[in-house]
Length: 337
Ligand code: BGC
Image 1 (spheres, rainbow, N blue to C red):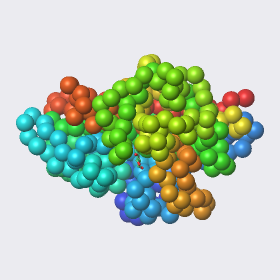
Image 2: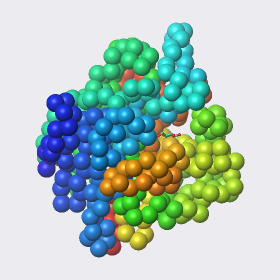
Image 3: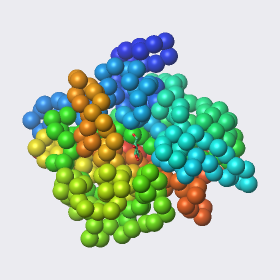
Image 4: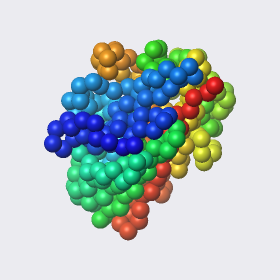
């Protein structure tokens, strides 16, 4: 069942998607995932994503809790790029670089929506030519489908001019339901390579083999045993904040919390995910007056290579006029017996 449960104002709503296994509350503001209520192995229901009780915090703070991020997620070096011989200037809103679509990226935009049936919610946003400095009218449709224990997110976009696109969702997962941080969560990532970053979090173009490093999650490992290792890349980023490049085409990331028996399985058509251990959460207050600090959650941000426009010969983040951006990421919230 899908129903509107609250009007925040005359344009922004909270919408509940519910079945016998999950309740997911979302907003048409930034397509934000506000709550994911799931059972544990004993039947106890908890919320497994970070968020705020006061809606205005989604509109004013900068951690992108639960939000859809775009037009281009992650960093673009210097906030500038050249496409078809033309230079474009974007906001520099993260050190010397552009981050997460700019000052008012898609996370801060109001989407239209329609409830299609009892399991499908469709959002739509038209990003105007020049918005946040990007070329082309970008017409974006995002579909959230809830079936059994899985939320499937489908992104579909076209543009009136050649442009850049790299959409992700920035949910902060904590499968313990805010009982503890993520150190006792087990992570498995089917990725034999990751991309290195500099001290500003910008991808450098260097791709490293994970073998014999803290980044080797091909076999499940506890996050707490890895994240504080004396590794140059971990020290630079204050934890994991790196693109992992997948070896497989589904079930690429599996996050498990043994005590509660909760497991999140992420499958995507995208080639990689930025794995971010909430390194910059700074003690702000979230739901139920919980203090959110570094390691209180993990983001699994499926996407193409950050700063591809500067790093790749044929940048995967270019969307040409007449072509379509068509990507799907699903989140299976499984309860182990
Ligand atoms: C980035 C982090 C950044 C965070 C902002 C993540 O996607 O990789 O470096 O601090 O978003 O909330």
